[in-house]
Image 1: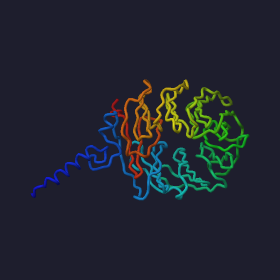
Image 2 (image 1 turned 90 degrees about the vertical axis):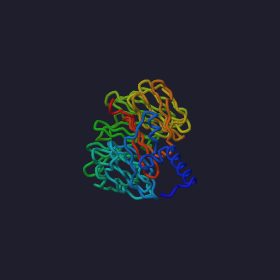
Image 3 (image 1 turned 45 degrees about the vertical axis):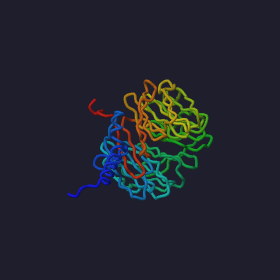
Length: 373
């Protein structure tokens, strides 16, 4: 065997050292992991699964989000890849809708995926992604659809709530705010429907008729999605407040609290069992006590909650780090380098953290040994 020159030996050692020092880019098996397992271990986290999605080299991962038991990855060409949240296995991958129109208005009802693209309503099988029905509406659709067992609820750009029979898509009635304001969010239940507007109205009607049950008025437009949690509705307004409104019977509502943020709001809150998390541009993420409406902590560099577990909040920051916040002690207890992470899915349901990058690598992280506890 020929002898290795001193120069080549130094070069090889340099490459090996660089691999071991990087944050997962020369990990075991030659994979390009998003985050170093060593760094995660120090933070009490581990990789549950990690996959490379089948998107083209000149295509980019645009969005990651959770719906039901799936994590959906959408490329900048509206190529949709649905993966099982437990193991990362791909359930289906296909194009849904033409390129050029952002595909970000999806609703899940049972095994039906309701997709809104401009004025087009696509209903697809949530297991296979195959289109069941495509309906071209006579109006543009302004927000994600609402759905219950009997009806589809569409907020039109004409400032009307259009109610269609689920079985045949025949419109049965319309509803609107008295001030003719635009609809920004819809919650569809079997017992009542709630929609919000850009004038700050939150209106509840009966599911099958344009009969108002109650109305609550915030100071300005409701932004992002309404969140229903038991008998409470949480939402954010451009008046800088986060609201909790309790539903006291079919026709009554009560303001439980409102929390003023230090800036105008552009997105809705995330709600967990005990905490409401709200982001304000330029001011960071605030954790609010769900029952009292009081401050738990504020993280100026925080952008969004990624998950929550056992009194800890896992927050992505503008500096591309994962900040681990102690909700009891109200302080940051650890941070992890997330330099390679540019996509993430908000998860207010459990401890799992879903992250990705533009090239289509996604991963699921969770607290180490969580399954054995």
